[in-house]
Structures are given as C-alpha cells and as structure tokens.
Amino acid sequence: MSILNNIRIALRALKANKLRSSLTVLGIVIGVAAVVALLSIGKGATQGITSQVEGMGTNLVTVSSSRMFRPGGVTSSSATLLYSDYEAIAAKVDNIAGIAPYYQTQESVATSNRTSTYSVIGITPSYESVTLQSIDLGRFLTSSDGLTKKRVAVIGATVSSDLFQGLNPIGRTIKINNVDFEVVGVLASKGTSGFMSGDSNVLIPLETGYAKVFGMRARSNSKYTLSGISISAATAESTDTVISQVETVLRSQHGLGLNDDLGFSVSSQAQMLSSLSSITSTLTALLGAIAGISLLVGGIGIMNITLVSVTERTREIGLRKAVGAPRKAILFQFLVETVTLSLIGGVLGIALGSAIAGIVTFLGLITASITLDVLVLSFTFSALIGLFFGIYPAWQASKLNPIEALRYE
Image (cartoon, rainbow, N blue to C red; front, side, top):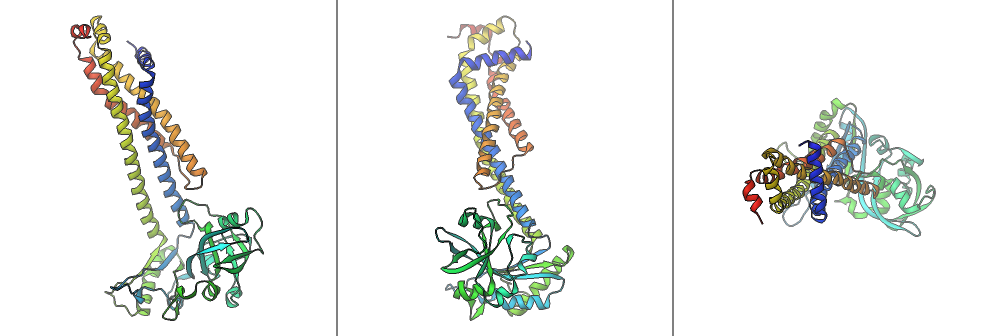
C-alpha cells in the first residue's frame, strides 16, 4: 500500500473521531506553542540585553557601590562610593577617555495632570559622551547647569511619551519629589527589552540633585555619595589596566589592604555582557525545558488515544491481516496516524506560539525574537513526539493474531 493511501486511511480514521482527535491535537498544540513562545521570548530578552549593554560602549568600565552590612545592621563605610573617590580616580588613573559620576534613585515625577515613578539620575555633562547618549530634542545638561544648581532636566523618550502624551516637552515643567524642574532635552530612544531601559530615565545636574532632591540619602558622614562611576577606557585593550588601577585607587581611598574585601564592583561591559548572556541563556534553556514537559504530556496523550484506537479497530486489523496485509503495513498505518496528529498539532502550535510572542512584543514587555531555528526545532520535535509515542501502539497493532482479532468483540 502506498504512503498516500496510508495517509488517506489515517485521515479517515481521525475524521471518524473528531472530538477525540481534536483533544489529542490540542495537547501537542499547547506544548509546541509553549516551546515557540518561551524560546522566542528568551532569545528576545538576550538580544535586547546585549543591545542595551553594547549600546553603552565597548570600552565602558562601571564602578558601583556594593554595600556590606555588619552585625547590627550598620553599613560598612568602606563599601560606600564617595564623590571623593570619583575625584581620586579622575586624577590618578591613566588611559581614561572620559569619566562620569552619577547618583541614581527612584522618584515621583509629575506634570499638572499625570504622575509616575522613574529613575532620576544626577549626572555631570560627561555622562553624555561616556555612556553614548544622544539628544532627540533640545539640549543636554551643561557645566553651567551644575555650577548654578539649575533645576533643569533631560528626560527619556518613554518619560516624554507618558507625561506629555505627544506634546513637545521642551520648556515645560515637571515636579521631581515636589521640586519644579524645566525640561530642556529629550533623549533619543534606545528601545526597550523589558530590562535596563534608559528611555525611562530622568537626568538632572548632580549638584542640583544633591541640593534639591536627594537629601541626606546621598550623604555618608557628611560626604556626598555616588551610586556609581562610568569610565570610558581609551582603548578596548586598556580596559583591564583601567580596572586594576581603579581598584588600587579605591583601596587607597578606603584604607583597604590587598587581602581585604574591596566592597565595590568594578567591571567592564564585556564582563557584564558575558554574565548577563550566561544568565539569560540558562533561563531560556530552563523555559524551553518546562515547555518541553508540556509537549511530552501531549505525546503521552497521543499514545493513550492510539492504544484506544487499536482496541476499537481490532477486527479491522484482523481483516486486513487476513487478506494479506503484512505487519509492516499495519505498523506503518498507525505510525502515520500518530505522526499526522502531531504534525497538525505542530503547525497549529507554531501559529499560536508565534501569535503569543507577537502579542508580548506588541505590548512592549519584551521584543520576542522568532527565529527559523526555533520554528524548525519545535516542528521537528512535535513530529518526533508523534513517532516515538506511536511506536508502541503501532507495534501492538501489527503483532495481533488475525484469527483472534476477527473473533474480538
């Protein structure tokens, strides 16, 4: 019997039990859809994070405070990054193309009719070149803004959209922690991956932040503190040297020996990217494994329904064998039925999973990445599931004794 005839018989058998076949296919659809959607979202998150990190420059070195807590809840001052640390690094570290201190906090930002919470970052003008910011409207912050403690702000594209609803925000007033600030610039959008989006930042002069917004939170023992320092190394090759020199300066500033815990994080973008990629890849694999379990359950459903089908069609099998059908023809027929079920489920599952990934992207949560390898993997896996779980029922059907099968009631 030809393959086409087997497929025709298989489709006829499936059509005879529409509801049962539909429920069986549904298990595969859910499993494949989960694999496609979760892997696409995982890949999209990885690509988004990579783009965000690389968009800040390949030579960027970041120094951040890693606060340690002593017994009793007292914060160790050796792990508090100070403004004076920035001044020492700027004066003593070689191979630096630019350096930008910043203090970051979450604050309520409001207009006359809208209020939301954003990251408010006190910066110096060098922040623009060090972190590769670009202006879409207006201007960036200047040294004069800081020296005169001007209440001016540069806002991200998302902040502009949220608070001003398409209106030109330049010259308009926002309230940061109930303090009026004039919007003088809007940053060009860098996009969002659901993580690390700079489009939701509000930038103000660091000196203004210390005087008007941050208050005592930004002080330690009457000294100004920082959330971090961004450093642009002169070349990619000098990055490791810059990191080593920065660590040496920090140890000197805080009276730490070579064997003491530094209490600060000093890392390059390459190191950060490697760590983040490792984490997201692991999470993507975990999500894929979880989705694979649902596909496995769908395969068990195929085996179950095929075993029932073999029992119901015992007389049919006996009749076919009595008229000369070989075991391999019976085996092949039931395999075709199970693989057909899984392939139909695979196609529908890919469509559903792609739709889910598209909805996640449309909502702006994460830009999912639907790639050909994910689709091929999902489709192939669904076919293999049908083949694997169909082998045992098909083998059971093929070894039935034709005489006993014809007597079966």
